[in-house]
Image (tube, rainbow, N blue to C red; front, side, top):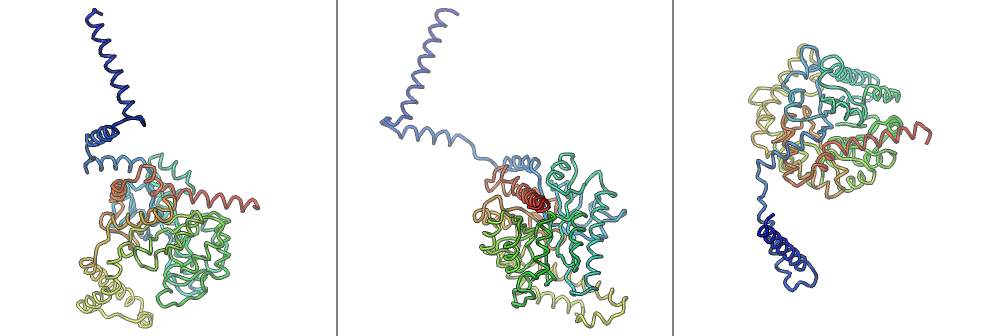
Length: 456
């Protein structure tokens, strides 16, 4: 190094040291001009360009690919689970394997749903047959039709292993315990078949619990839970089945929270303070779910997350259906009149009724206020603020009435993640909302079951 270069180097170092000392003095309590620090910080902040929408989407896609996305409620029709017609193809369903792949939906809880009917031996037998048909359909898809694409999970460890293997994950929820009948051994049978949550009622009072549908007329059967309903909660705790509180009455839910030793799940419900639907949970019940350690899976069902849509459907839908029925010359029969039809006439009536309702619903959707992904995330944020992020999750109710603008089938799942990123949720928080919270509750429920089985 020449003398000239050495002198320049020493000069540069001295200048740098003086600069650092000056900056340190400016940051000290005795600095006579604190404003200079503020100005420097403001200048630095202003030099950072705000994230563009394209950059946000790119970042959101990375998050969406890394987290495990899980939807706790997708209804099924067993006609779509046959060797020649199944979810390995892009059927006209909101959920199937191609749509899950396109939208990055990793885990779908397929639902063993049974509509409520008579509380007698004949009703129970028919309901049980329906439930077994759906259990077998899900096993057929995962074990015979497409085992290389999707596998059934029984635990959170299964979910992570299957996801790590690059396959989609199926899980099973039971919507309405009506098929159990009066034989408690059926609960263990359903658990063995893969059922990992179960609601004790649906739209109508079951032998176990009152339904939220009794609220409008204040007509209930049990005043909450029946005696065998309480027994069912104990058995579900023993086996490791999550208690689903999405359809029972408020009194029944409150009593479930009183007696369950394990955390509960609302598999597809939202916040009643934002949308006043009987299927949603009041702030008091939400607080109790928090205290219980459970999770509420916010649902993408239009009339549950958009109040204007709910009111419109309640006040205008019947009139539109009646108008469309008249235009199509469809005569609505009473249940007694339908029962009097011969089998051929019954099928014809049901087909005509279905066609009429499809036309009417299309008319309704043209004019009804729209529910959007933004509405869904409004409900998520409300509950996060009220009860904490660790008690909130996400569900769709696809192929059972769910679907909103922006998330109308599994292929659009990414849009939910994008909106969460837009609302400043971190990757860790998004992972918790999509699957972490629900899987934590499943783990807790299974730990309680182990304790109970050990005699604790």
